[in-house]
Length: 232
Image 1 (tube, rainbow, N blue to C red):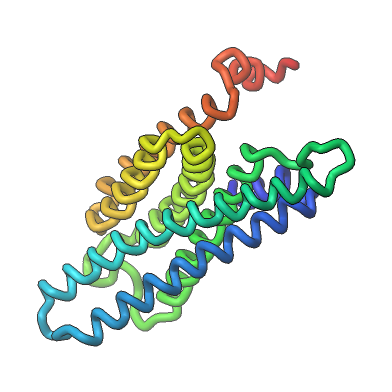
Image 2 (image 1 turned 120 degrees about the vertical axis):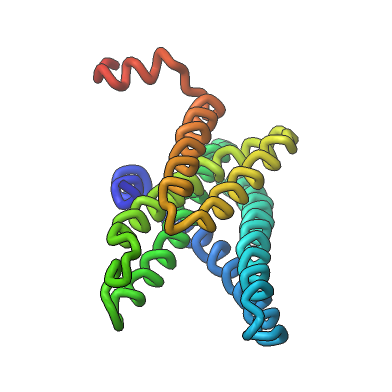
């Protein structure tokens, strides 16, 4: 599904590809900084203290979420400046891409890079040694991880729309809602290997974020019904 989003809505437009790659780069930098801080914290602590190491892991995840949203805000400010430059260079005084379209493409960029790193970690685990489920653990690890990766890609897309809309209209509660949802989804992964505890809440939040982003983008129930019925 994420590949479909890219092929049908972004791949044909060079400007959208640039925004997508830049968004992926911003997410990558946020991951690099959060990983560096977590690595230093782990090295400076007692590796034998399991309780402390678990606490550091939780801290690392929560800090990474906050840093990702901070970089999303920085990317919004950068794109806002870019729009002003595009308007100044255009002959008709209009930007070739709207802030809503930028929000969508930037969200896809964040999501695709997040999903790519999730899959790289999983593929590294498949190299072995051992077999998933051999000690009585769930054999659905890779399947549920794939579904979790997909929901995170979509959530980043919807969060991008909500976040940019909140910044554009000074609705700070929308920004806070994105941060809270991001923290909730990331925190739910600590329920694993009880995968129901992470997948079900994440997909419910995805449905909520999708409906919210759809309405903020100018969608309506009537338009959705026409789309489902393939009516113009």
